[in-house]
Length: 448
Image 1 (spheres, rainbow, N blue to C red):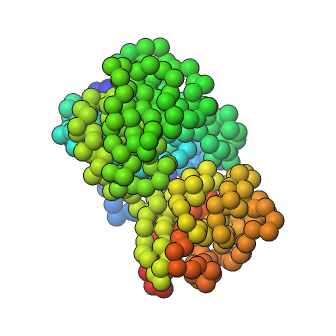
Image 2 (image 1 turned 30 degrees about the vertical axis):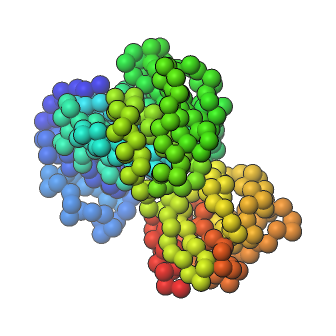
Image 3 (image 1 turned 90 degrees about the horizontal axis):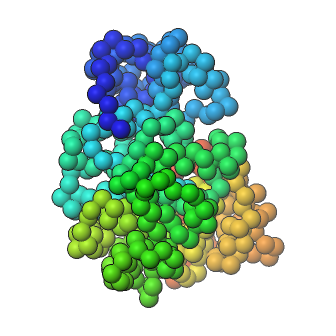
């Protein structure tokens, strides 16, 4: 809820000087706050040249002034010393999303979930802009929310992707619309348990009430079991008709249908969309339901759905070489997301998977690889664990690096085949992040 806060001389400690910490520190310092920033990295590795001159910087460690408001990086784990320090010395510990939510002058439409967040939130932003409203796209999508705050007024819409890490310290956010794409096993190593991960996700809707909407994937039994806050409108979408009588969206006859109460109407055919695959039909429905909750009209919705071209690193076509099509889905950083990619593509499929460890269970993915692919090329720290989950007899090739995986996939592929990078894992064994991994993949494939 919007708060008119005076920041002059207010003491604030910011833990972490990555993108979100830098934006928060600079915004606060520009308004007269006494900002202290600390980060375990050396000063030479930090964006010191981009930091407001009044900010007090403490590199090579974590430091919090006694009694300060603390803005904590989402990358700091609950098990870490920095987390304990923040809660021991700070008067309050919040995320940059919480800071933004307290200051935001306009409605917030927020998207969270395990998979599909980035495509859904970008499409939702696209639909709002097609509607003629000024909107920002920020949060976990890669744009720091505090860098975007001053672009907003009461007639704008803030469209945010929010991760479970960011929600942990975001107690008062009250979106006009919250969208939950799905819940699958992920980030257990951060939260400590699946139950804690789910509770972190629920924070997004805990303050919603009359006049607000919650968009739920009706194919997800965990989401369907959630009790809604009093007075909110629950809107459902799924691959079959959700059971409620109104506010439902579903797939039937290779098209997306909507029923707001008077009766069903066709929104758009799957062939009209530029994004492919069953999982992208789900993303389109979730964004459509979010847009309808904001008041976007049907014709604008149809036009926006047809004109959206998708995102980098999400089922991204890279090239065709010798009759083989190559796709980059580096964003598939868990087994559930990788499985959706394998389900979406048709034809002789070779999957490149593997990366750094997140403690995931690869059992279901292994069986899907056997059922949907002609071969798996596995690399990185998790290669052997994924291989062990694939039923015996299915072609599996283990190599150390992504570059060698590409060469092996080319050797195996025949005209008419598809090669897809769907790692099912994080990227930190070989790369800075999934975007870096995806760019390297594309560069290497284009160089073949």
